[in-house]
Length: 309
Image 1 (cartoon, rainbow, N blue to C red):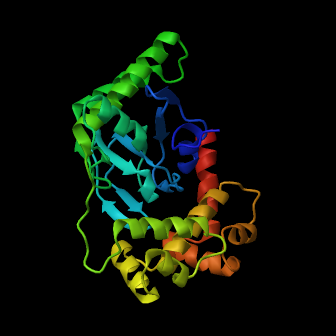
Image 2: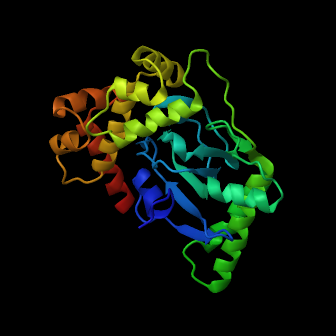
């Protein structure tokens, strides 16, 4: 089973089955992959969570979209159109979720941060922290575009020569990203009164680990060496939402995964995602997604019927 955001795992986030995928690995055995995703209908809606991973997705857009929105850590970070041939980078440590309003055809290159660091070291760059890109920032790069177009014809082909080509291109793209788009540090503008980056990461990780049963502000504050009030104010300045709101967003992420199974009732989903009851789940889901859970599930079922037709 794939645990990274590629192949079947990435396909489930977009409600697609068995998308084409090519694999490779770095000299030290770090996984690299590229997945082809295609959605032919309009009004597709929100993706499910893509998984929390110390890795990046480098997206090559093969089809224009005039409506594209991106959320990271439950906060809207980008709402813009993009042209065919452009790219953007998703940091999987930030729980990205996207709204897809039009037909989509894209390649998603999976690159663990460890692979970027390794490629940088082989190029003599010893202080790389990762890719230094703003969330959802679109850019046009002919190298990324050319590599993607070269890989397209060999998806679902098993000849050894094709695997050799995939190895060269995926490893070469990783080295190119490390050489061209890496940074020795990633320092977003510091908001006065916000949490330090390590505190924000710690709080989010603690809440992810306790997403079902919940965790008190006091426990989070103690771990960060802050008072409960300072923790709550700092977290909201950092993320735009309270810790409780952020935790509810993560529970919605869990619910979205569970809703892919048509045999699981909404009451069971509410319980297994950590909500007090189905009514609470329905209220929070509708506020976040703009549609009731039942309507969302019906839309998901209709999408699957269209794909099967």
